[in-house]
Amino acid sequence: MRKYNTILSLFVLFLIFNMIFKPALYIEATLNGITAWAFNVLPSVLPFMFFTKVLSSLGTTEKLSRVFGQASQKLFKTPPISAFVFLTSAVSGYPIGAKMTADLYSNGKISKSEAFKMCSFCNTSGPMFIVGAVGVGMLGNPIYGYIILISHLIGAILNGILYRKLKVREEVDEEKTAYKQDKQDLSGMIVDSCLSIISVGAIIAIFFVVITALSPVFSIFPAKLSPILQGMIEITKGCKEIGLALHGFGAVIASTFVISFGGLSTILQSLTMLNRLKMPVKLFFLQKLTHAILSTLVSVVLCLIII
Image (tube, rainbow, N blue to C red; front, top):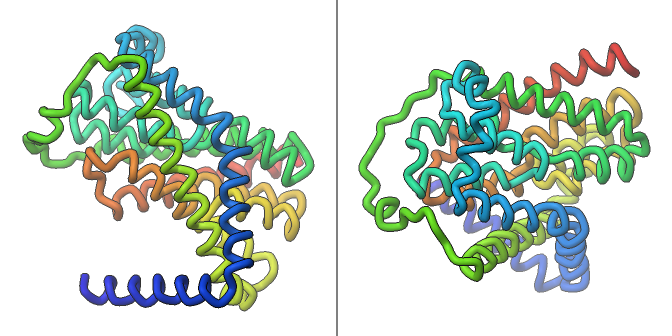
């Protein structure tokens, strides 16, 4: 652990010195990150984050989950409400699924084992980003966006099946018990949603700075590999670079992998939401990696059929 702390400390010092000697470059990088958050994430995520919290507070989520509840129980061995979380995450995108899973656990509606299993398939990107921003805006073809979206969601379902037998030791969490609540007033829900989305924006901006600092390293790799590596750090930046470096089949496959993995930025956003759940970083990272691999395999098949 001490070794990792030393490496991280050296990297942070490297970032600070870079920002001191090249302030204009890193101010621009931060502004680019804030812009990406403001135009790609904020409009699509904040309303969903607030209204899903309203539904949870009203107890509506349990009623809606009954429609697909049996399917989720059979496929993933998770409670019926996980179907509603999956569908909401699939519509709204990162990090709504993680936030809803954490809220359900904090409210005592699911166990830790169930929450860990739900993280394997209830943590997805949404159609507004995949089809709109990536397919149309970055790859220049909505068909590509739909292929990525379908591959991404099928990959999530397969990933959930892969982890359906996952079990963890349940512990009495006094902090969770103290936090447990089924009701929250309107102002509380607004504040909670705003704080969550602001933390997401801060993480995106920080990772844009990280990518800028590592740009000399990325330049060492082949031109077609560098965008994928950037995407594994921050998906918006990575997908944008993929659209410039790759075309057709290659662009779809690379974008599917990057979006399904989520990038370190999105993983950190989700882990921030899952803080109260104490989700192991290694397990969550593994779940995102297997999701990326499964989605990519699906996208290869779809590309061979459609493109």
